[in-house]
Amino acid sequence: MKNKGRTRSYPVVQMLTKTLYLAIPVVILFVVVSWFSFSEIRKQNNLALKSSVNIYQNELEHKLSAIEHFVQWTVVHDPILDAFDEAGHMGDFRDASNELRLRVSDMQYSTGSEYMYFFYWDEKDIFFNASDLKVNYETYKKIKERIKSDVGTNYTWEPCMIGDNAFLYYSITYEHRIFSCVVSMEDILSPLSSINLGEQGSIQALSADGDVFYRTSEGPGGFRGNFYNRLIFPGDEADLPFTLAIDSLALGNYGRLFFLQFIVFLAALMLCFIMGGYVLVSYRKVILPIKIFSKSLSEMDSLKDTEGLILTDSRVQELNQINDQFKNLIHEITRLRIDVYEAELDNNKFMIHFLQQQIKPHFYLNCLTTIDSMVSLGDMDAAKKMLMFTSRYFRYLFQVNNNFVPLINELAHVEDYLSIQNMRLSRPTQYETDLPKDCNQLSIPPLLLITFVENSVKHATPPEGESLKISISAKKLLDAEDGAGDILEIVISDNGQGFDPQILNKIKNGEDIISDDGSHIGITNCIRRLSLLYNNSFELIADNTEEHGARITLRIPVKV
Image (cartoon, rainbow, N blue to C red):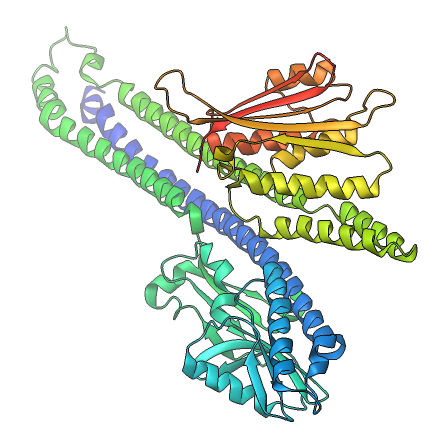
């Protein structure tokens, strides 16, 4: 029995074996979690890419449809092209071409200046570009030859090669007059350039026959091509004349998180082997000499319990603690990734909602209905004024694509809005401004003031017998610290019933004031936009005047 006890392995050998066994499930866990993370990240990245491309395809389809309608209507119905007949003179042709360029310029406000328009009259071989050229002279001559050769033929949007460049081409022929629109594929696909496709990512445009007629780059190749996905976006499903094939990095924007997770797993695996090596070294350098020494004392009756020479299980406990810390770290990484994704999603939802708020279909339809009523009643002067105010109002919306605009432009937009409302509504609105000259060109976020003015028009009820009065004033304030004029104060007030005390309290406490029916959403969005643009460097105060009217005081840093 004593001999059997002496040949029994010490616990340190068992710990070494357990350490090696522990490496096996760690490796399996590493493979399973890595594959799951890779698949999930790849799925989320593909969903984000599909969403972006679908938005792009819808917007492009609307633009191409609008251009089709514009080209067809112009060449068939527009009276300015009637000047191009055999009885016309060169002066008439020149005036008509200038007028056509003005029409095209107005169209480009909504569709973009990258779309080039060309006109050709074959009876007297008159050809001119109706818009600014975005190509060199050699390409222009080839476009001219293509259009002249297409007299008598109508084309829907179709991809074509003109020289060495890829274009989308649309052309209509009517009574010896041909009106065409040409746009390069580079300009067409430029909105997608902001998408992170990876270092070797590529966007390819395919014709209806499946041939590649344009690509942004050669695309992924070699071993690195295994880390790229290819997504196909058929053109017929989006009513577009070409199909998109996009090669994007499988991990996309989340690649760093995945590789960080990969490194953490490798670190845990290496830690297991290091601990095994440490146990092995401890056994050889410490325990084995003690074992040899104990054998010389094994026959001593006083030494019956050798448990004190055996290592305890504390090292296994430490390994468990490290594993627990590792699991917590993975949990924190996952939570951080979800928080970042949700924050980005929330911001994108807000920006999309803001863009949706810029164009209000019911307001646009009401304006058109009012104009139609004025025309039906024969009040052409009022209809012309209403049409002028409406066109300026919506032109400003279409041109607002920056974070800041001059204050004087924003006030002009407010005045157009109130002019429209005065012509639509039976209740007139009085409007006055107090704007010093040195504040005209100071920059503010676009469509900021109109939100508060619309709130007054919709919700403010003036005293009986009085009309609604809205006033806007602006001035520079001096910073009390350094004396620099770096604060712009804008005050918007009306003579209505004022804000509800609950609304004032929520605005003061920074709470969300959107009600169940969606009212006050504009003010909430304005506060969010100001927070995004100025962080905490702005001040918005809502209160009621002594006459119980509503008043908004806004203080923002001066931007020229």
